[in-house]
Length: 366
Image (cartoon, rainbow, N blue to C red; front, side, top):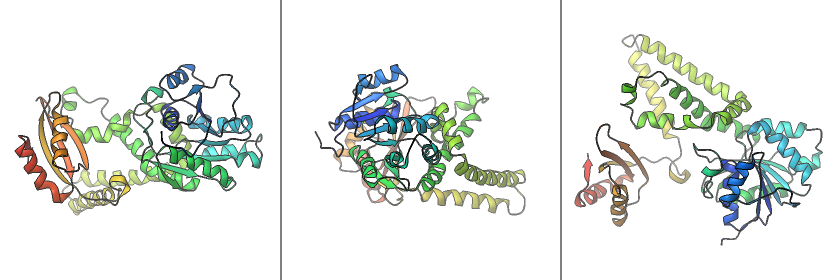
């Protein structure tokens, strides 16, 4: 069993997807974990899958308390934990930081010595599924984990918070609260809002229209399936950072609508070209694999019969050739028992991959 930086015990309050995943990851490192949740069922499920032991009436002295609750109740739970466990470092893992920190610092029950033991953090990981049953101990592996230490935080407590991220295999980032909230508004909260608004346009769509849907629609609406109760809180808590971004999108939409209202008018085609070019340039700025600089990969599309074992065999053939897959996507062909697998590789190995696949009997679309 790999060694850990935390000795424990660790108390996890809130056994949803993230809290339970924290418990599973720490238990895999041998760290003793206790669990608490307002829902006995959620806590029980988390215990049953091995995330820790129910706190119940146990008297413990935790090294670390992790608050894994929705933003609306996080600040109160942080304050309660600081008072209940006077020697513990207390962190939260909510996706907004400014409103929570303000509420903690304004809590009249807490002295500066007590708030110095609080460190705001945010693991940038998740799934469309929620609840403890969806938890995974590897959820945070190689994912960003932001440490947002406030000005009065004790450096020793910040180190404990960093140890949590390290033990769970995350990549650590340090930001101020304001930098964090502005960043997640752009790269997380804005995409969620856009995806939900796109998906809402499908409510009155005819069935024959949706039957034509491909990966483009699935990709842009994937996160629209996220937990609406949680996202209501996230949007409201980070509204100040999100509104300017949405306003910018509204201006772009107004520009597009005006252009399309007279698509043959003077400058219309140029304006459309500029809009697409701006989108291409923005997409190119997204970091590539493992956070490396963006890189253009070569795409090879393989036709695969829709029957058991085909994908596994395709991956095995590629692996035996010693070719590394940079990305993989699959789309089913409407009305046919066949799938189209898009395999991304470094450009220099594209022709080699096509030769390997063709030799092994795969149909490659070129």
